[in-house]
Amino acid sequence: MCRFRVHPLLDWTELNIWEYLDLERIPLPKLYFDQGNGMRYRSLGCVPCTGTVSSRASTIPQIISELRVTTIAERSGRAQDEGRGMETLRKLGHM
Image (cartoon, one colour):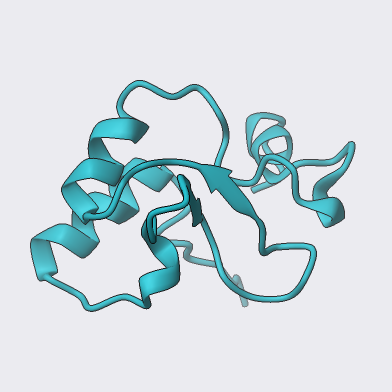
């Protein structure tokens, strides 16, 4: 018997995800957007995954505009990825 794992979002970038959220008009917590202090969260979850980034984006289209000009990986700065980032593993063919 042969088994395959299917990862439909494996090749999606953070930009692809935000474009999908915008297209489907999916409601999001306010923490994903700047609340007037120039900071917003890129992801929410456990402590190592959750941190703020400098951003003035207060709407999904503004986040999309920012992401089109950034070179920072979505997982950058996460403690659990130090030295073995998901981006690196993907490039090496482990995913």
